[in-house]
Image 1: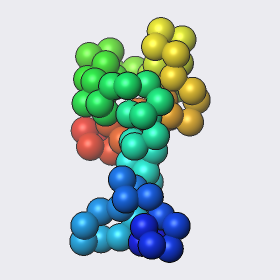
Image 2: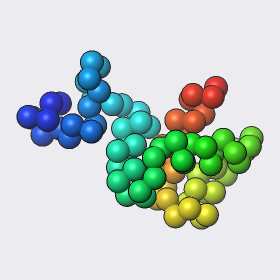
Image 3: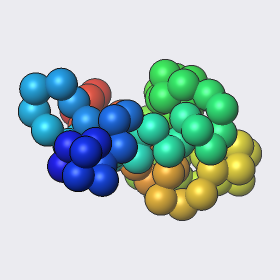
Image 4: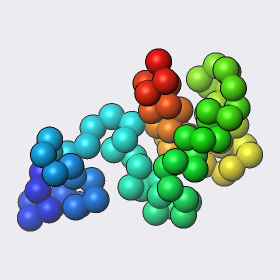
Length: 82
């Protein structure tokens, strides 16, 4: 969806259309918590090998993220890191 049709410019990519998957949460995460995504992904990576929900819980309890935002960050890191 283009900005003219109601989409937000920050949720768009230049060539591929709207951002999908966990990355679609990134503009909202950055606005809500005031930190770049790289800040949150570095926390997840520094936590070491843990189960998905343990990492989600870490972001929620120690950093105050909501469940959906924490889940999106963890899913993104896991997809990038394999």
